[in-house]
Length: 251
Ligand code: NDP
Image (tube, rainbow, N blue to C red):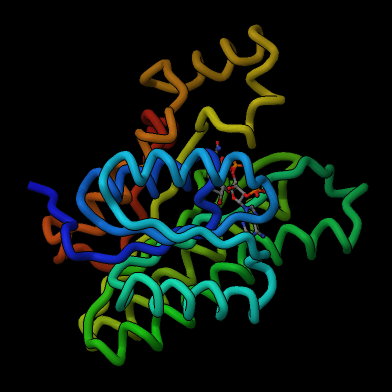
C-alpha cells in the first residue's frame, strides 16, 4: 500500500546508518533518491549500488550539511538531475560524549551545527521548494534524548529537543501550503554512531534489558516509520513526534 513511485526523496546523511536505511527503503517503495554524506565515499558507493539494484535513480553528493551553501548545492543538483523534490528527510547528525563541566563551547557548537543548523538549512530549502509546488513532505530525525534528556550528552539532547520544536513550528507555519512536517524520535539504534557503546557485550545487554521490548532497533526499524510518514497513508499526520524506541518512554 505504500507507493512512492514518481516521487523524489532527499536524505541528508544517507551513506550510513539510519540515513542509508531510509534512502534504500525509499527506493524499495519506488522513489528516486538523492542523499548527502560528509566524507565516507566507500559507504556512499555501497549505498548507491543498493539503490540502483532496486531499479531507482540515485544521486549522491559529498557535502557538509553544516554549511548553508553546501545544502543549497545539494538541493539544487538533486532537483536539477532528478526532478522536483517531494520528500526531504533531515537525518544527518552526530553524537559525542561530553560531561557538562568539561564541555567546551566548540563541542557545544559542533553538535548544534551538525544536528540543528543542518536541519534548519535543509528545512528552509524544502519549505521554499514545497511552497512553490504547494505540496511536500518534510521529516526530521530527533531522538529520545530530545524528549527526556541524556546524561553526558546535554548538547546532543538540547539539539534534538530543538528539532521537535522546529518540527511543530514548521507544521504550524506550512500546513496551509499543503506541506506535511513530522519528526521521528528513535531510541537506541545499532549503527556506527553507537558501536563504541554496543561493542561491550555486557553494556549492550544492560541496555537491551532496559528497553521494554528487550531489543535494540535496527536502522530499518526507523526507516520503515519514515517511509510510512512520507507516504499518502500518513497524509493526515501533522506536527507529530513519532517515538520508535521499543517502549523506552513507558516508564
Ligand atoms: P551514523 O553516524 O551511523 O551515520 C551518520 C550519517 O550522517 C553518515 O552518512 C554521515 O556521513 C552523515 N553525516 C553526519 N554529519 C554530516 C554532515 N555534517 N553533513 C553531511 N553528512 C553528515 O549515525 P546514525 O545513522 O546512527 O544517526 C542518524 C541520525 O539519527 C542522527 O541525527 C542521530 O542523531 C539520530 N539518532 C540516532 C540514534 C542511534 O542510536 N544511532 C538514536 C536516536 C537518534 P559520513 O559517513 O560521510 O560522515
